[in-house]
Length: 294
Ligand code: 3HC
Image (cartoon, rainbow, N blue to C red; front, top):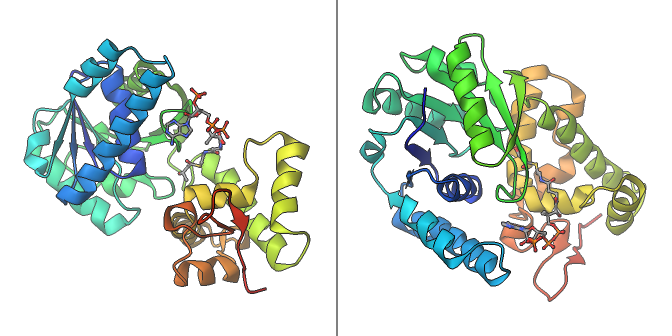
């Protein structure tokens, strides 16, 4: 099946990134948010990325104008009715996602593929909220979407071969490297990444080393672009906590259990970079290790 028009639901960090790369690849994209302020913020992020890319000579002014013309924001889900592929990137909450998939199933033609960008929920639950589970799959992008090359293409037990192939080729067509994953919570990357990030928090709790030295250790010792505590601030401590709770519910294994320090930081409103404070304090010109009260 040829994808001609793409819908994205959710204009947060992930949704905006997905809409950006899809519009750049030449697809008409409609991105939907629930509130004008959220839509404006997401579209503003995309505009900023494009302006920076033009400044750096990575994108021509003409290509930017073409990409911008491909992108349209909306507050109405009905505006996604003529999309061949809709990618959901809303909050990591199964009830909200099931409601959305059921609504998309009513609005979109039966051949439209519905995909979820979930990081930790199983896609089958969303698929079964629709009357077309064979046309539902996962398309899991990574943050920051314009930079990270990977997309996990997730096949449930009900996903048809045609849907999987189309989704896989779509990921390629937007300049990403797809990998095939089964519908297990966390797929490939988060299955391995989440316990690692939680272990880094446990190392802080246990006083193994300072926040800076744990980060430095993994950057210089393993060649990671960011240490785990910087990465936690980058992904968001609230998001990590959501994901860890979902994976813990699924597997009932200690390695996915959110450590008390993570829970306390989220309760305190320290969500990482986006809230100005997490393991680091971002209020100054350079991030500084925050007081964790340990
Ligand atoms: N949007 C667009 N472009 C961005 C960007 C963003 N948010 N952040 C950085 N970039 C671009 C920069 O403009 C720069 O482009 P250039 O090479 O053309 O100049 C390039 O990326 C490198 O950026 P910087 O020089 O500013 O900084 P770094 O070299 O440190 O790279 C990074 C930044 C790409 C974020 C790098 O630190 C990195 O790869 N970090 C790890 C990210 C990671 O692990 N992501 C996965 C998170 S897990 C996930 O998403 C799964 C989910 O389910 C939780």
